[in-house]
Length: 297
Ligand code: NAD
Image (tube, rainbow, N blue to C red; front, top):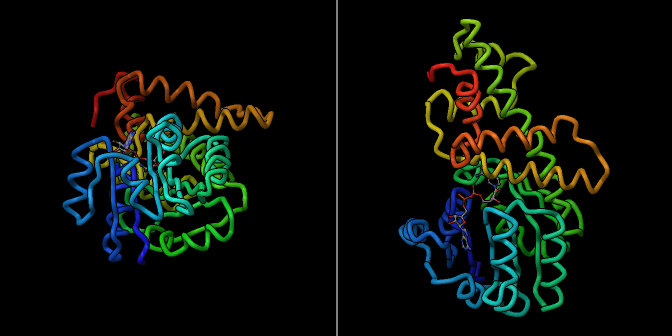
């Protein structure tokens, strides 16, 4: 690709995604407020810059993978933000999970200034980011989608252009994460109760993996985290909580009552307050053990 690529937000997802762009022989300019993240990026061959503004000024395609809608809004719209410093015609791709209204307002603002914008949240976790097997849920103009397809093909595997509205991918992504919220707590409750019944956790996993109780989240949470007693995120409880709040906001606007979904917001708030906010979401299992005062594995 002879376009200069920029990547802002080199965290659990953004770092491996940007490294895959580097491995595909692209020139990639990056920025993160965390110096260590920038170091890892430059060690992999990326060019670290001092601010989001610098990335915007240098690059033809500017990608973001940032934690919260508030941060995304600041990085795009503040005085030093991307939108005010990107070159005319630049393509902005937001991989973050935000609220749908934010995608729409960024798209509108970008268009007014002669920039192009796609809302492109991803699913597949850190493993998917590392292995370039992410599912990407894209909303925005077809021409812009087409001009990003090479990039999407490098960082992901299943790419969906879901419509011309830049928020349509986010709406779908929030539905995905609503289910993740259910399953993560289901996994925690099932394993803790199974242990209490004297059932070996590996046996439980093996049998349920061959039964309808199985889910991709059981596989992820058990195989990658619970089994190894390692809760370094992955996808943190705080990020899941953010997405469940966003899903609830979407449901409220649509007049849909999420009978259990809204309880999940309270549940993961409690789990975060117990001290598991920065742990991987699979720590719901540890939280339940705390609540039941059961000794850890
Ligand atoms: P993360 O917290 O690991 O990474 C975010 C990065 O953004 C951090 O390195 C942080 O230092 C950086 N950052 C924060 N403020 C910044 C700013 N103002 N300017 C530049 N950089 C800044 O989060 P993550 O897990 O990589 O998630 C990123 C996004 O992707 C989130 O919206 C999340 O919901 C979504 N997501 C995450 C996963 C996952 O499994 N982790 C999966 C799918 C989608």
